[in-house]
Image (cartoon, rainbow, N blue to C red; front, side):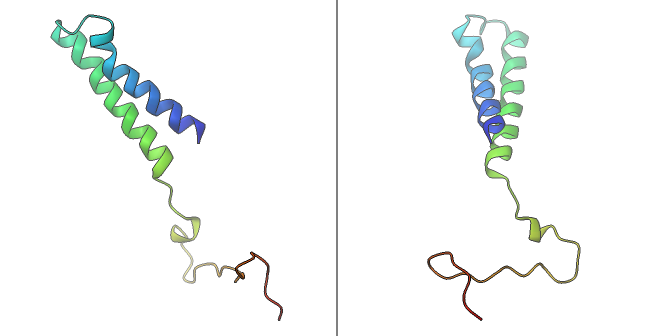
Length: 78
């Protein structure tokens, strides 16, 4: 999880670096970190918010049955 946030922050820093470091007048030098930063922001957001539950990815015919729990997160008596 921390890797996702780190990637996201580095991506944002890459996007603002041409203006923060003063080389935004040079076109190629400006667009390379912006595009790389956008890629890093997308990858970081994907790592943070793009999780898929394991049983959705299951290739078996029947998904795994989850244990029923009560409000107190205790298994019900049988």
